[in-house]
Image 1: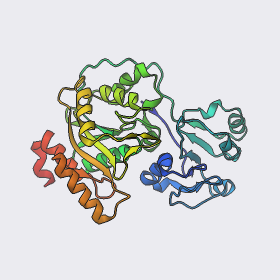
Image 2 (image 1 turned 135 degrees about the vertical axis):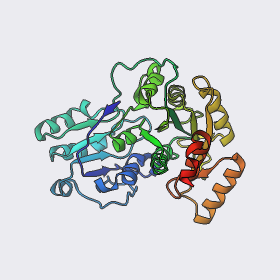
Image 3 (image 1 turned 90 degrees about the horizontal axis):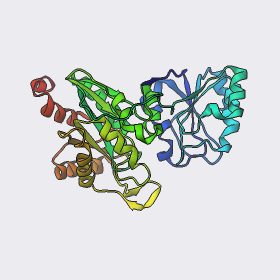
Length: 347
């Protein structure tokens, strides 16, 4: 895995984004590393709010901000030209620029020249390790749980992070494995699976969760969606390479169509579970679903509880909103299924 070190504190750049879906990097950093996030900067027309003070770049420099983190992305992952004035000014002020977009910061002459003068770093997170292998499909020791989604940006990363926290709190041996740019920024290590050449995606996933102790769980951040018309390929490779023993279905309550592809309706929960098992059995015949994670942020308290209870009764599995209520019910399912000897220890 690639390890990165970011210079704190951070200011989060959200460009002119108006859709929280495309600002998930910024929102994720604030949710999981709020103590390091000191401000937000956006361009004219931008409306995404992160709950941070708005700063100018000069204010950020005066207050000792170490890194400007690009907290938004558009389909395709390029750096729009209208971002460059802001990013160049930040680099001139000695603030590191941290990007997880597909376009490399270091390939831009304006940013490279500004950083050379000030000593700022251009940190490209979305660069996979060199010499990745082709997947072998060979069984590895240890246990793995993968987040799978009905779509992109439905809470796979948040679910994995919350699950790692609650598994550790229950006494389980677990580690979050980051497979995307935001997760890597949060964890400080990982492999950006969607930046890997397709032939090597499964091999990269195998490296992301290598052999481990028999009681150890790799909690693997998911990518894309197996039914996604644009990003299904990365989901397939991550699934076969991860060889998960268990998986969690992730969904956003109220979403009915693939985000950005309005002509494609979302698959049903049953369709996602059945297809994930069918594909996952290629490398782990014992794969099974242990629950669902639902982002209920658009629902009231009463609506959220009723929605989760209904989905749980339909699936016959725990359904949780891990950010709103925690993931303890799914942890209990994992313990009952895989660690019955420690069931008493968690009640």
